[in-house]
Image (cartoon, rainbow over all chains, first blue to last red; front, top):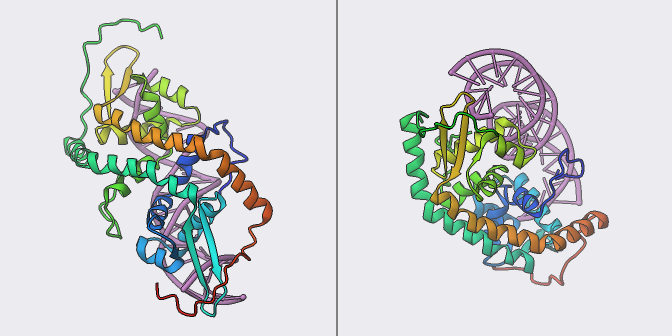
Length: 137
Length: 137
DNA sequence: CTGCATCCCTTTGGATACTG
DNA sequence: CAGTATCCAAAGGGATGCAG
């Protein structure tokens, strides 16, 4: 699934890697859900709302692979699996929270700008008094 | 790209919205590139390395729509367009930086865990002495 | 130089069915 | 309950050509 060995481009900066992970759309939600404590698979599925079991499984596997989540199987008659954030997983919560705070703060302005843009038809007529004949580069 | 009116699910929390935006893979890079100052389209394309003009245009339009980036057209013989972060755009830099720092700090551990997981074949045999017949949780 | 439109291949992800 | 496998539709995204 996740594979970057054959990357056609030479970008392997850490930020890029992380963004690819949290860009998973579900990863952030799973981490957030697990912040309060360990949860079972079905509990996660119920709590996240909208995630298919396929996506949930994929996301959990990826997090487990990266050492951000532990997977504990209890060999009982009704199979029971609990997922829990590791130390590293918990530390991810901070920057994620910062992003969420930013979202909460700026979302109204963003929504407003979005409506303005859509309604106005984004007429790009805006320009400055560009009197520089040749920019040279 | 822009369309969430017909969302089958009822999740419109701000965090979700923002993550969808930065999950764009390119958005973060564009914002980062523009942090040092205004850049022209071609400069952005050169600096980001790997982005197609289609993706770059899309990303810039989305950012512009959200009021995070301004687009200034200089009506010259060789058309010239400069993109610049707005105030709101600059504030996004902080939480993004936090995430990047987290990435830089934890990437070694993540890479190690990843290798461990891949090599070990992730044998899930791990379990505790599950003697609780009914979890009650 | 900037960027829109088209073609088309790749990836993502949901629904469903089946195993342990 | 937890998870895998398969099928298939929709979105993502590159390449190219053309317009302002």
